[in-house]
Length: 192
Image (cartoon, helix red, strand yellow):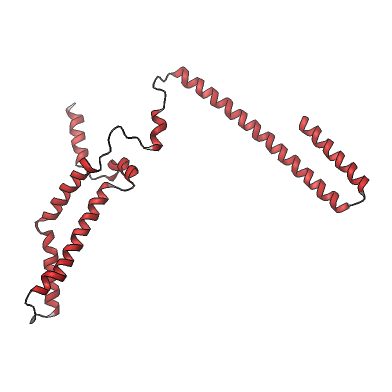
């Protein structure tokens, strides 16, 4: 039992996105992606605050543009010092995965619903019976498919004969006779 508990604890610390595949299917995105977006927004907003609020308020009239840029970069990078933001984001990510983006156990995705409808009292006999039913159904479908293929071939042959007769165009009596022969020929083939 302690080995299983240890394995589960190891998996909690794992950074594998496949662990949250169900959440990704349910929400349409990985919950980790949400916290990544929040992290990026914080960095962008901080850079804007430094650029528009902090830098204009500093007395930097006598400082070169290169030094201003270096100071600005240092101020922007301050948010990442000592991994404070990273540790806060890790806590936010853990919280959102545990409480916000957690899918309740009773929720089933539409593509998983057939698994719920499976017969819980599965037996070998029932499986063999179902297999035989499916085999018979497949045989029936193959026979029907073969019959349809033959019918299509017969119809194509009749169309070819009709087109040939149209080209000959030798009078109405001859055309009626040929059409009757073709019709009888098709009837005979289909009855076989």
